[in-house]
Image 1 (cartoon, rainbow, N blue to C red):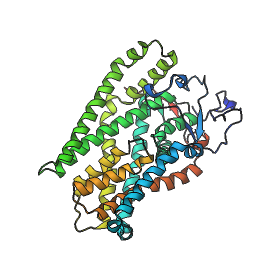
Image 2: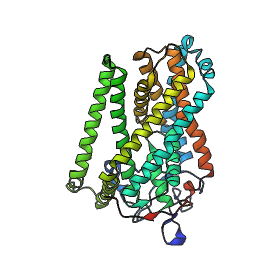
Image 3: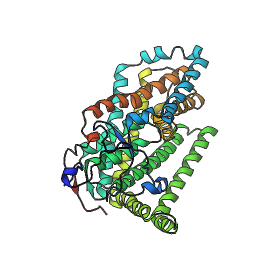
Image 4: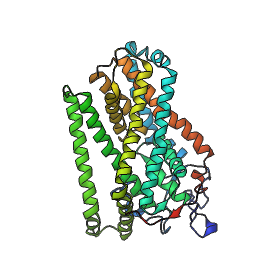
Length: 399
């Protein structure tokens, strides 16, 4: 049985301590581990201790503090300035973009919205299965709620800190191991990248079966290299990761302990019996991303734009891959430029139509997450450590 850890139940109070004093930060503040990361080599040695022992306090900052930091403000303002400059530079062509967006079919926009949000329960269920593989059970409602809150953070703060926040929220509301949870988030991202690469290559070959343009050949080459590097990284992590760490005498023992639990999370979550289900869920999840763009294009009804399912899959997955660039929240500015560039250069979509498609698609995939995520944060007890809806149960690790 698990629940939020408080001083009353003998556990350590996980509410953050304000710098310079023992007073707790306001309980309704969204807290993010400022030093945690998804891989062991990104975790500073001074912060390497896992929350399993609760031996060391980990520095945390509120979301409002993070948003006020200079680098966060710059990461938001610079892409917005670039987008504004792009509009100013091409104003004559782009002046009709607002009218194009206003003329989109509300019904098909709603369909795109519903299809996109269907992916969140699927993502929550996939994460539930990954956690179950490490020996931790959580309900699909709790996993989906925590995951959606992490998406809110990713849409507001760069560097994918929402993934860190997801692990922190689970730890705050249960007895889950923080480092093992990092492992499940890490392997989830690996599954996503594999799925994006494979679906993107398949959709690209089908979309350009008459001949691959040089730009697409370059994209395919990058995708193949990424998949090969990830496979090599997993092989090294599984067979030599601990040996490499123990061979470095200057690393503290706690970092090795952190790595051990992280590796348990990675390879405990990814067991053979669950691989077909995890693979099928990953394909279904990324098809919701692709169908969202497909229905956005259909909503405009442009007579000179015929993207098709394969084209929508290819463009949407390229856009999703660009969100991994940690320079701005949710890839702001980078994803829009990538989608517009592919639509105009590869699919010969006129610039105004391509811009309207990219902006409406991002309204659904980013702006709506900010709106609904903020509402969920206001009513959810998870950021305040209220515990899981159904107390988590310990389980034998699958496989």
